[in-house]
Length: 340
Image 1 (cartoon, rainbow, N blue to C red):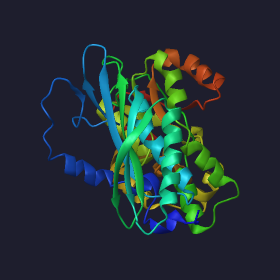
Image 2: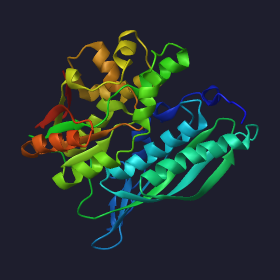
Image 3: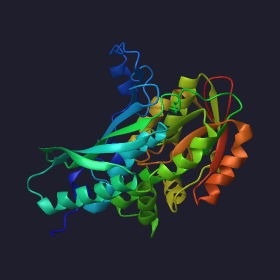
């Protein structure tokens, strides 16, 4: 197969390519939410996926996510893009059932390259317990790939962003820094092994973490992706009517990411995330920790708000499964995010 450096065809890669959250908020403000009693989660408020009730026992979780290449290897790109989309279903407490590819691809590239993208995606879809059943492909000068995913969840066991309560403990299940590492890779300054560690994190489905969290009945859950930890923490806090306190030095970080942040590496998404969440974040943390907390993540971990009395057992349960269980803060009365 002809070797193609996919990232040279993309202006921005992964979740760093997401539309500005601040602009998106303005755009969606003009849309009137659908008036349907069985639409349990839609635009008011928006969440990680839409949820529609079928009956007393079943609700559909539906999401779509796609982006340009963030790595050169096509199979890895497909796997990361698929993981990122599938994780939205896990973030709602659901289980994926069916996925369809959303593909834009230059005709000039060998068809085998697209075949590798699809193969990488199919492997992750199968690992999530779902089926890749088709999709839609258009011609475009910039490659893009992702999935539309349908899953199931019990109507009374949905994990919203809007349920955090004062006294909750906040957990994060993956390290931060994918955006910084990917930017450094594009700039040719990534430390040895940093990209491999970032890829391993980005192709890790949140299925196992969600399975451990589910019996503990969390108050609120979201996955940390393009808006960065502070952007998603702000969404969780604002929709729950609480204040999130995050301890900077408790944040888990990918190998090499702290040094890259210290050296001033940033992605384009950093500024957009600060524009969105910054007015609602009171920060007393060092600049390096701010860079990591605003860094746009691709296929990041779950941010879980859990009653404090259940937190030690959850922490131990995640650790016993070999999963990260970083206790990064807590919830109190108030509004916004305190980062210190």
